[in-house]
Length: 462
Image (cartoon, rainbow, N blue to C red):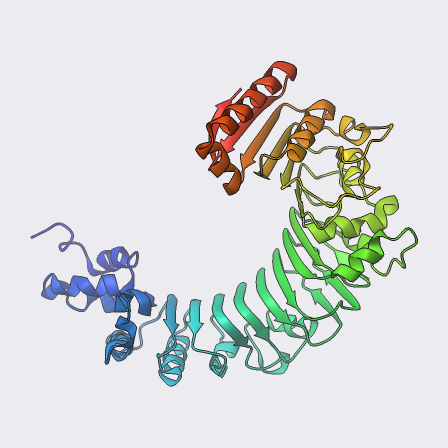
């Protein structure tokens, strides 16, 4: 007798819980002792693509999808009324919506704690009502390439034990504002929702329990006002069209923030005018509300919008890591002020160096000559600079030299070459030699340790 078969049923069930349900079911062939043991595992994981072995065209063969559905039915039947801790399901078009909803209702009746659903049955599919009134559900993850329809608004939703809600979808439809819906989750800690279909031009996210908020709005125009009353928030990722106002931003305990405000081309033109109407100048209220953050990521539109509030920019005393995303269509007018207002900055990361050149780029770059060249860099205490997406162009090289010249506290610079640049270096010996020679020159001229990376591997450690 093998040692594994001699173990108690509960121990063998625990071992099987680390397998998918299909893999666990295959152990029923070992012996009578294993025949239906897999059905006692309180963690079920069904994936129709894995079950169907997705060779070309096999999904369309007669009976293949039906056999998957029969397998799920059989497992749930063998389990009887035993509790389910976690239920994970991935399925695509072809699976019966009625049977799918029957499975979900059954696991909900058996006090499931954790639901992880990836469902792509088309825009006409609606989740069952029972999903939104569970008394036991703790973690709920929904994924769909199509739209997710929240069954109803706040009046019909009650998930008193839910701590984590993650919805990743092409669009999320709900009948109510977030400020009305959130009280339905009194202990919610982690809220991640992509492409929320906002139903109004103003909303408030208010929760004393939230520690993680990652939210992407889906709308066609700029909102009037958005507020965040989340005093215990630690991680904040916010993507949406910039609002005209942020009346309340309460995030005193924030550790990480990634701000990706959106604008259109006409709005950016307004921002660059000498006497712009400053419609979005209230973005400074958002920055004031997150000023205790320790790691800050700013996307290209956000960086340019911050030029509207350079004179009132808050001081980020706790920021030790700053990441700036660059785009050739967006300017760096606010970068000098950002660097000056991060007095304890240690790590500075640029996702690309190419940006739109304006007469207000400041001295953070060398696009335009200035008498006070490099003053914002000299005062910056940053020790490590990382440059990602390096395209091996002369403009970028001049920027790198500018940083090496003026960052007075710099100890290390990491340069990551983008894919096109890797091709140039690997396929052209002359370019490769030129780049490496430049790295050697940096080593001779500066005390900073410069590293060049290809495909995340250092090819030169000087």
